[in-house]
Amino acid sequence: MRVLIYGGSFNPPHLGHIRSVQTAMAALEPDRTLLIPAAIPPHKTLAEGTPDRQHRLAMTALAAEAIPGCEASDLELARTGPSYTSDTLRQLRRRYPGAELIFLMGTDMLLTIESWHEPEVIMALASLAIFARETGREGQIAAQAAHLREKYGAVVYELAGEPVTVSSTGIRALLPQRKGREYLTEGVYACIIRHRLYGAKPDLDWLWEQAYGYLKPTRVAHVQGAEAMARRLARRWGADETDAAEAAILHDCTKKLDREEQLRLCEKYGIIADKWELENPELLHAKTGAAFAADLFGAPAHIADAIRWHTTGRPGMTLLEQIVFLADAIEEHRASYPALEAIREAAFEDLDAATELCLRRTLAFLEGQGETIHPDTARTREYYLQKLEDKGALPVPWAAQE
Ligand code: DGI
Ligand code: FE
Ligand code: FE
Image (cartoon, rainbow, N blue to C red; front, side, top):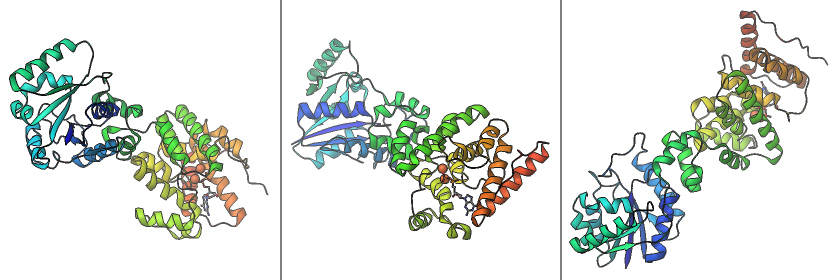
């Protein structure tokens, strides 16, 4: 029996790790392959902002899912103290008596192994499998392998293959810039975004791929229009354009759910539906959408709030909230309604005037339909009317005509 062991920080596990394991599995044909995230790697301190053990184990398990025959092990995370490879190998020796243990590492590790804790124990208990981390050091590596064979009786397998140049450090730097997705498996990336590990923000193309599943096909154009308009407004008014896009992409993510499903989400997320929402569950998608976006896509509070208030608005909206509220109402695919053009124009002149007109028109529309008016809709309009007066601006002239 052969057990291939790949230990590391897996912070996060990426396609380079996966390719290394696959190369080793193909060459060595192990019966079991274990990815073992280290609790505290003895040779380096974990980068600041490193996710906790549970998240690193979850990411490693998700990465292992992409490799048939591979599994993640909590052997080191479950242990206290530094993660010494020699201790891990002792544990594995007890678990798999008689098996050949093969410890997989990069060439950079091979060069430093004599400085590890109990190198002689490591090389007595396990064979070493080496994959290239860089080109141009082949001579040095062959010499080191020969030295370890001679001095410790080490068994060293040198694996052929393209050098793996992806690094976790590089990926961590990309994630907050909505980049880096291409170096990760789908499962690992979704986990990173869901929990916003490493300060990650979602790649907006990826977010769109996710959003399609939650939108009725007939709503896609509206959401695309909302994103484009939110971006334009963000540029016009100096808000973060990609945050505006993110909120817009997610703003109607629970819109297609019926009353029963809305109420189920309310239950799940501890949302209390008020009497207006119970009467008109159409209104609930703002609250459930915010909770859903935070749960599935880790939407931070300022983005979740823009989703939360996009239907009724609220007094004293943040710039982002106001942008998403208006983008939803005036995006280019919105079926025409009275005042639409006036609101569009105002949105680039005075956001508060546009907001007030938008709400004035909604109130007139709801009254005309005999619909109940949510108090948030009414008081938000009052607030912006007052705000215009306070700053000495006039409301946009528009009268609902029958
Ligand atoms: O989800 P969208 O259709 O893109 O747009 P939205 O989130 O602004 O929802 C619009 C619907 O919400 C529209 O049918 C009117 C309704 N609405 C907005 N404010 C109120 C309201 N319905 C009632 N009953 N009362 C309100 O105050
Ligand atoms: Fe909506
Ligand atoms: Fe919408």
